[in-house]
Image 1 (cartoon, one colour):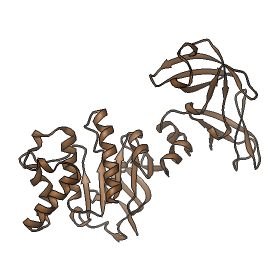
Image 2: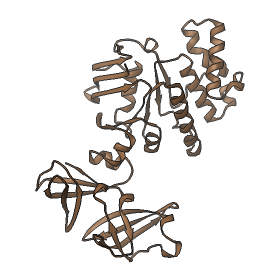
Image 3: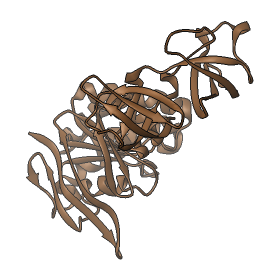
Length: 353
């Protein structure tokens, strides 16, 4: 049984389609992230699952039940907002208990479930504090406990780490993922942060301009992007206009300007115009000569601490190359103007039509 199923949902505002024909299934216990830039439709999609936005067309199903016309409180979803939305005049315990009170759960059961929820997020000793007495990370945990205490069928998270600093955000995403896996609760997470999506998700839904660009595991999305948008949004890529010279069952030969490369086999035919996508870290840079290596010259270089980024010109084509610092001795690090050799493994190249 699927936890959430969106069937061709769309949402229009005064003639503008914010979401266009989105279909996604979230399986039981799965962590699915909607990822994309501001205005891509990811939050609107989440709000349609929650019931705060009614689809212009399409259906929303939760636990295989059509909830398209149901109000939020009848959908069995827990929601965590970016700004936490805690009641400042209520204690932590009262904030967490609020949803249970609205559902007319008895006082004794409310107290038991509030303790359980706060223990889950490691705030059991702060039940009597007020939100103003908590740090940003603690407030985020209270909001999470409030969403979990109602025992929802689906947990919805709308950029919950947006108000936290980088170090705390990294810490909280590890905690949240561990908690989600322990509870085995189906989760839909919205973010524009690629690192959050890659590190937390079972699958990622990449959205752009209201449409889905690609759905896949983090590895599939990063290593085999299907479109130029996905490749450019998910980290850095060399996006190169190429032409297919020949293709067979073993490989595909492509031409990029004066540069010829071997890519994995594909269904493309000779003469096809494609985009060759190559991640900078998949290009091997060396000063040694070797069979199949490309001669190049460094035209720019940036030191980034754990790595350095080199811009290399080879056969009239500019490539961005990322090199971990621990692979080259300090005294041997290349500089602008150095002659180098490049190796690009065939499996480092993804072709997009």
